[in-house]
Image 1 (cartoon, rainbow, N blue to C red):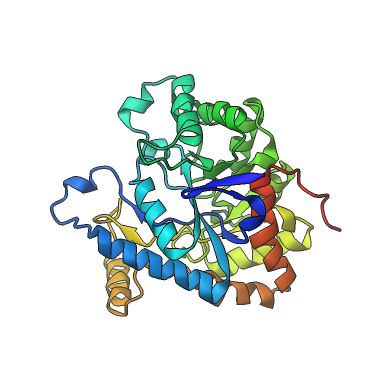
Image 2 (spheres, rainbow, N blue to C red; image 1 turned 45 degrees about the vertical axis):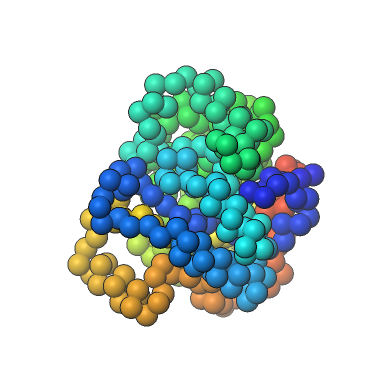
Length: 333
């Protein structure tokens, strides 16, 4: 069984230690018109290569999934160049963002079949004229409920998943919508284990996590370090509880971090947030490094009884099984 990376297919066994939800570059629509939004492509590529090499050499990460939505500055050619220069397997996706912050007007007017046709082409033929093929499908929904427009894009993802066999990686907003996404995937004929329900660590309620894993999908604790959404102590408590309840095989860990961002953020920052960013930038730590999960969060898990075998299984076995399309193993005792 092979998984499609930006440089071509590789055996799923070659994935190794994998971060399942990270980003290289993000650009919200409209940033390109801001005269102050300057992007030095060569300098960015050099920085991204340096950071990915650090992940490989210091923490043994071999694969990096970047589920950047199409309209958020996805640049498949740049991903390929960064992958080639860093030696990191990079997997990109096809699919759009959620209604409140994405979904281009042109594609809003298309039918689910027309949207699926785009997804299928990017998976089977390539993205534009880059020759880079997507290795998974991205789905995103907002809060507090999934909109009718988002349901159409989710239906398109179901069509494309069944046609191509690649898995689905989702965005949920503010810890809402995971079980509802699962219900819509089931309605669209997609098996639960082919879906990773993202950003579930944005919800502090253990009952929510139990509902997602009971639905048979993978669960994303994939905003580690994003303290604006949740303290990491809460994430660590909830992740450890899932491991103890026998659901280690369904947990995906990642950080949803980026290496570069065009222009300003898609919201106004508070004075405190801007001061924090300015301070980190002066220290050479902005954007925050991808290594945080290993240097800071994994020790928090160890303190809660999650051992190194658990960590290795979540970072290696689960991504391999997810991309291979294998059924989940029986729940651990």
